[in-house]
Amino acid sequence: MTALTIDRINKRYGNLHILKDISIPIGQGEFVSLLGPSGCGKTTTLRCIAGFEQPDSGRILFGDRDVTRALPEQRDIGMVFQSYALFPHMTVAENLSFGLEVRKVSVPNRQRRIADVLAMVRLEGYDKRYPRELSGGQQQRVALARALVIEPSVLLLDEPLANLDATLRDEMRFFIRDLQQRVGITSIYVTHDQAEAMVMSDKIVVMSAGTISQFGSPREIYERPTSQSVAGFIGRSNTISGKIAEALGQDSYKVDTPCGSLGTTGPAGLAKGTDVRIMIRPENIRTLRHEAGTGHQQGAGEAGHGENALAGAVINSIYQGSANQLAVKLGSGDRIVVDVGGRNPLDVGEQVTLRFAARDTWLLAS
Ligand SMILES: Nc1ncnc2c1ncn2[C@@H]1O[C@H](COP(=O)(O)OP(=O)(O)OP(=O)(O)O)[C@@H](O)[C@H]1O
Image (cartoon, rainbow, N blue to C red; front, side, top):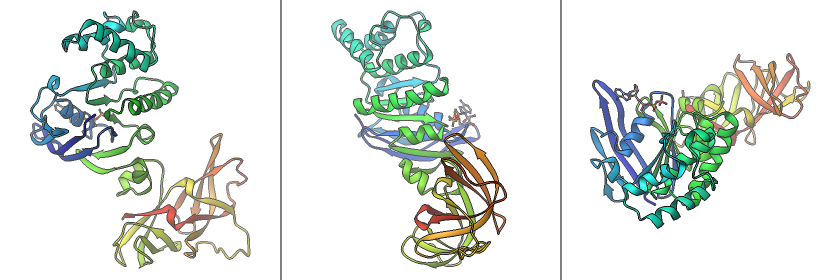
């Protein structure tokens, strides 16, 4: 197990500045995902860590060891690729044995380690099969076993589940995470699938155009995104524009919006008058049928006791089996998406009150 430090690396291909001062501190035994849209530099970062690419500047440390200029075979890494990259003419055991032979591991030790790792990936008895005799999921488990059998200090995974169907992908997420935790190996995982990054990672690096937009735990990134683009990339969110009217505490604010005044939570230090967007996740909003005489007036909000209320009308309702998704138009014209669990009693055209707590909101820069 090794901690890993990526320290201000830059990488250019010709005129293209692909990685711009990327720094990522990775703790011993942590599982860190690099997440971002196609072309943002995830694979290039991973290839720099593996040693297949050299950064133009910056350093990569495995523990205290500076490996920036070391060859891939000097770095003590295991790699798993999207394409599995198994040798097709070799059996499972021969695929696993290859890296051990290169490292001059003795025959009895080789046999023991192959048996151990096959048990670990639940493929006991498959040692004599060829890759073509295995399903996609089994081939990926062999690829994982091949990366782990050499007992590397760092495991690098580049979209390893992208070729698998949705059900198998779900299963493999848990399988890889569980295995990684049992072995305790520091792992870096490239994906463009936010759900995958959320369920598997200790930390997520959200990348955009060669820079890091945010680095934090899945919870921090989901609940406290630092920008609108991160909020939009990780899950669904609603936003309402407004202006800071008053700071109510270190991280709580009253915000004036076209729908009224709302109680919110946000980063410390926002000055009165700052333009902001209030982010609210669809699952954090309760929808109540609007009843005359409840005191909730169309288009007006309340900012009392940390609970907000907004009036609107249902303009769309989508049945999703276990839940329903409603779209509600507020008096201000804003469209808010809400998740409604169970059987949805609300119809298009009905007047509703949306309720959400100040602690379930988060302020983003406008
Ligand atoms: N060898 C190369 N020569 C020139 N440009 C390259 C090279 N390798 C990658 N790039 C460019 O660098 C950028 C980042 O590529 P990279 O593969 O790191 O992105 P990514 O985030 O992993 O994308 P994807 O999810 O599509 O794999 C892209 O614009 C790509 O075209």
